[in-house]
Image (cartoon, one colour):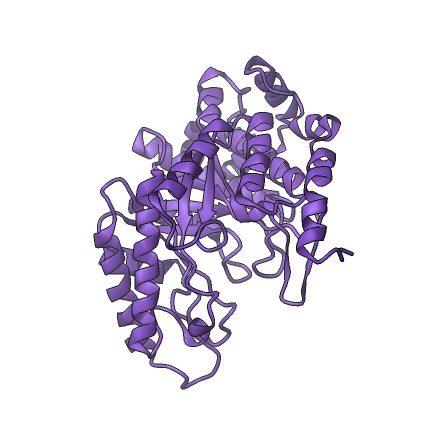
Length: 405
């Protein structure tokens, strides 16, 4: 018997309209000099100040038309005691560049007092300090109009017996509930998880199930944030996405890619088919819901080797390409094959859409929106990186006492 599968159509107006609504938030920290635990690798054009980061984000948005918001990191971008005028100046600076401020990311992992944990620390005064930091981050979010507070809890232990897992769990629950209750009605609490690093025996928020439980306990505006690099090898991420979406508990994404662990690689650079399947899970959830999923699509990448702006443009273009391919899956034909238990036909629905080359259609679509056909080529031809390096390199040398090599 001939195996019949649905033939993906081209990107019609309905699919292109959905693609146009795909807004991807950029991370401020993704434009600064970063490195590994062994050292930091400097780039002449990397951002030094928050204004530099906004300039870089504006360049990505100008080229792609898809990145209207910038996530900020408290302490890296703003002092925890920043004034209302500071927040107002930040909002104005973003608006002047055609941007807005997105999620606010507290920092409860950097200070020396967090060596043995933040909200799961044995010391009640340190737990209080971490909670107070997140409460202050909420006030920053309120002042800049942020839709989300996105804390990453790095707490965990490195040796058996080092801590009481159950007691630490209760402390995390209590802290997140207090934080949730302090947020304005306009904000969501996005709870991120990670199986290991910096802790290597146990992590207090280690997987999506724990994040789900913590979110449920925190309150109705708490959801789970899925970082595509924060999983053990072999994890079926699209399963998690589908499950959380069906539970109305999917709050957002941190998009990146990885080969070993939390590698912070460019989206789709290692396994684009996996990213495509995640996008398909989003498309299926949206069909079931009857509207776009109310989730935050964010990038979390800190490129040590690639030029910062180029890497972000690459990621956004890849996200658009893989989302477009997912939109081409004939969901009716897929469901028909599933109803017949025709495994081959069902899989072919995915493979045929993934094999479609959508780049020319996307180039034409960008032209109709007044954008460059090829944003990456336009960025390289425009000389932005050279201008940024010329403006920033003297400041870098000054900051390093004249020594920069």
